[in-house]
Length: 403
Image 1 (tube, rainbow, N blue to C red):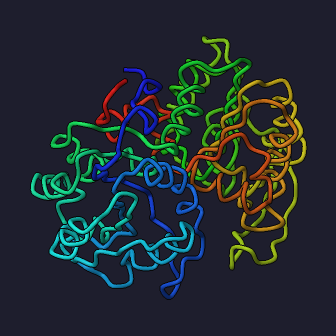
Image 2 (cartoon, rainbow, N blue to C red; image 1 turned 135 degrees about the horizontal axis):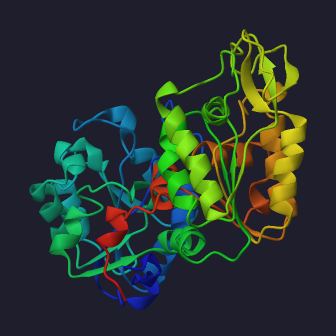
């Protein structure tokens, strides 16, 4: 199955039809106010397209983890309000704790072409995360066409991402999903070479399957962040009090051998920025020294890559044609420990390669540091983009019709 061959909203006719769109409106809220509306803005092109094509647009999403019960602080009401403002038209909010209740049914029955209704948080129902049949059928009963535009939830087999498709004949992906598949799918299935991947973040266990898959595809794999110290330990270096996953040392040795066997360059830090303590608060002052990667003092922990490493990583990016980056190089929330992440972000901003940022912390880092507009694509899905890079089939994408 090629993920690049899915039906899209451009392949379907929705005029006069009820269209259920699974969006990713899992936005951060503080006292009922949305603090980052990137995900809402990202959903607008698909919603506008369906409105303009004369569809009756029914939106659904989860928000947070209400664990199968109605929690007022996780209601999608604030999202309906912001959507109305962005679209310049009323988005009717169907406030049913059962998601598909009397309000939703009445709102959908009253719809005219081009109208928009937003359902309540799908995770108010316990079956949602278990892909239960009842909720899947109820969601399907509202629509004639189903569109999945929630890449951030595509790695979950839930009612609103997978179950519903069993009871709706016509299915497609939205523009946001299509863009994710084009960039991430293109990089994984058919990259323009040289293909460089940069992996960081804290836990080596989270990224090992990604490394294993990319060692068969990339020309260069760069490892930084907290996960690098398990690799350095696998080389026989002392890593002091740095993050270390002792159970994965052998696995890291295997990965280094695999890289060599496949002719893939595996770049590890040659110097590190270290401190005796982890900053508390995380953005508070911290005393650091820079040491070679094989000379970390026993009572120090590595918290960022050093300047020589930053230069080496930036050099590797210069000649690349495709770059995928997932995970920061250090504790980027701290100005003293953000230098490595900034250097990598800057090298990506200055290259003419296709640059793809996996979601989660790397997306936050790139946006916080102001490099977002310079990247070709910033993924909206943290866990989903990781599983995609592992080469896994994502259930929410597999469930949509092929062209």
